[in-house]
Image (cartoon, rainbow, N blue to C red; front, side, top):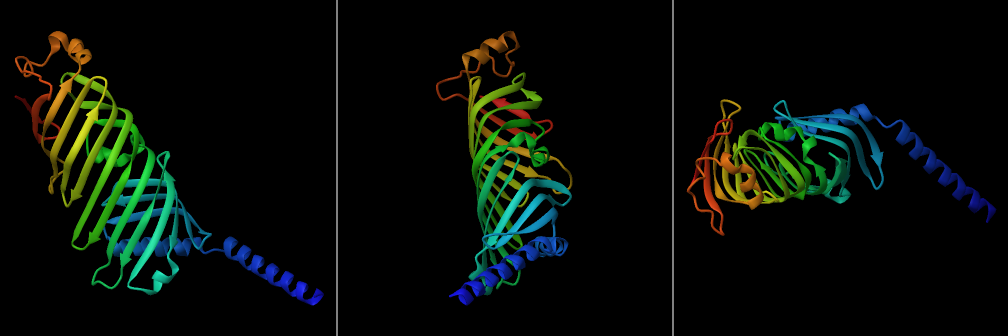
Length: 287
């Protein structure tokens, strides 16, 4: 029995020592370069910078301070990210990965499926996230000149089957504000309780299937599209919807009520409107 216990003790010691040296001597730089190259092969327009990589348990990798750029523009800056593969899927046509992490003050998790059997890798990503501080997201500066703040929760789905890519999401933004540039309805800032939106990005087109804003100054419903110009940074709006200013906002506007609104009847369903043209100088129409 003593010999048996001694062998068990030595086995445990050897395993622990191996794990210790594997962790401390883990080839972080080599793994970082490998991951960056794999991402470049999947999408040449994406570049990723990782501060350090460590092994994780259950089997996987823990990445720290990750910066993702698309064609030189910031897409995401994450505090950490843990990636865990489905081990058996590594030997099949489709690799399954799960991930979770922290960034922008919130958390996220999801799954990635990578189909290796196709001529060009097909990637599908599903993610859930919560508590994201949108005012910390640099990527919004490339989408809109307006400054948006609040806490973001929702789901995203990304599909990349070359040459087509599509990103869709169901988003809920709470307890925030929008700083308009240029002002809208003579207002520089509005606050809101919630904004719920169903969005899709396909190529150079952002489609807003549904967007509902509920606030203490106004309520609004918006749908339409934003086209990203292929030759410049300009964005072309084609939006329509209804706006329902609350009495508090109408009283605040007073004599400054935009001429375009005077004479319009704001019924229970709200005032219909359209917004068209370049984002930096759009044309508004109410009817």
